[in-house]
Picture 1 (tube, one colour):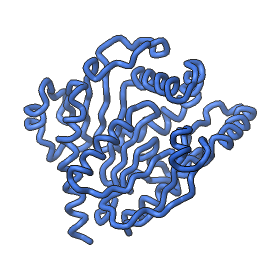
Picture 2 (cartoon, helix red, strand yellow):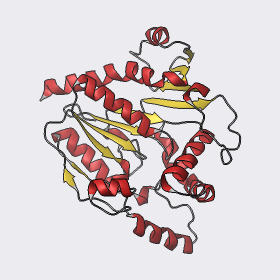
Picture 3 (tube, helix red, strand yellow):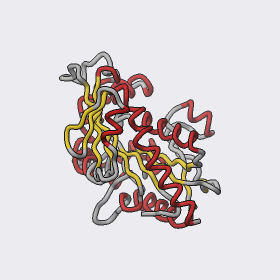
Picture 4 (cartoon, helix red, strand yellow):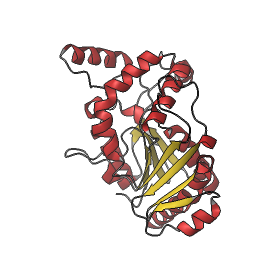
Length: 291
């Protein structure tokens, strides 16, 4: 773990809601005057869209129907670990962008499904912020989790996660429900073996639980709203967390275990602001003293 140049990662599956959490972090950074370098997990895919389709076809022909973007070998995770380590030591590193659609293509000048060129991080950042699928991976060969100072898991219950993914991929990417379902099934092996184990490494998990019927996510017409949800917040190490303060500040919240608090879904942003702001301030303050 770094101290001179801190690293924060937000990790979650496709459709988990990490982008929403990212916006809360950005609000905190702006308000507290913190300069963050942001990198996206998609930037570390091993294949562009065309090459990934070819690799999927090759593996399927060999009888492997589990390969996906969740897979360790589908991503440049050794490169990500190196960049984390280098940044933690020097405040330097590099990243690129994976271009998803025409809107991003116009912004970056690269066709959809391809990567931009690698670029060096700007000078003078206070911390590195990662959002993606693999921000807390730990295996015998790779220890990304060990390079990160604050690890956040975004983990909706699985039916809600699937509903969010189906609606997003149909609306934003033009996929059919059947196509998204095929992707979910193909990814299930690595969801169990790659995604889920990361949530034992994370420092704080935010798990949204709907309180409406999501029994069949594949026919759900709407995504449950925050008002129709609860959020379970679990702290790996609750030492130093002022739970009485949090429950007094967040109306309708209560504790279920010594390391867990439950809040109304529409209070998640408030809870994140209250919980994360002092943690981020402490990381940055300690780091600045060492430079």
